[in-house]
Image 1 (cartoon, one colour):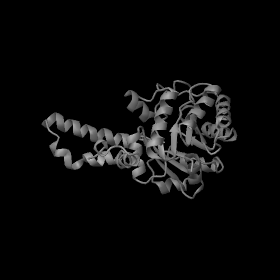
Image 2 (cartoon, rainbow, N blue to C red; image 1 turned 180 degrees about the vertical axis):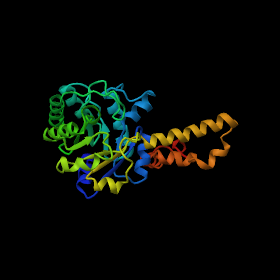
Image 3 (cartoon, rainbow, N blue to C red; image 1 turned 135 degrees about the vertical axis):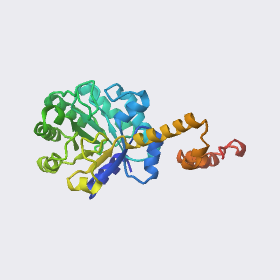
Image 4 (cartoon, rainbow, N blue to C red; image 1 turned 45 degrees about the horizontal axis):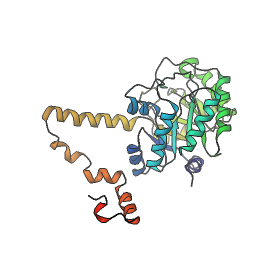
Length: 295
């Protein structure tokens, strides 16, 4: 089954789809190993891992698509990916959608910020006119070859124009053909109003780490009417804390011996990366025994 079709089917089932966020193929494998049905490629995380920089619109479309394709290959899961502003005008958006689709991605979200954009939980954002975003979404819908590829329209208008304007924009984006609506950074007081006022449109909940949107449990988010929940950078934050602990221990003691029981061993690491599949393929295609990868 194509990942696009799989994601569409998941979204049609009761409850919300949970998509942990990753920025690389290794952590995408971890998401699959833990039994999740979908994975999210975070733009802020991709900027952090590729550039060591904040999410302020520095990555190009080809860099983002390349990363999303690697995550799709490694995980085998439907990938929902950040696609920023679409990287230009309507013709750029067409190329963006087709590039993500060819890379094996199942869905992307496009936002209504100007370029260069800002992380949705930073201040200093500016918006394009609603008519410009509507045109981009129409171009995105027309550009896809696979009708199951999901176009997610994100509005950052709450921080710029207010909550009512954000919902008005979202309604226009749904009318333009967006499959899912993503109202960025609502407060706890605003959350219960979104689903009723958008009249049953499929909604995305962004459980970002800033705290601007509450850290609700899955069942609470479902009751609010959301169908897709992304957790953009939690895995990355966990890895930063863990890596810092290893480095500080090495710096302070000159040894990592005390850490070995708390970390995956050599074999666990290679098995996570698909070592057993490599071994099976080498055996299948007759690689000489003494040349095969072994422990």
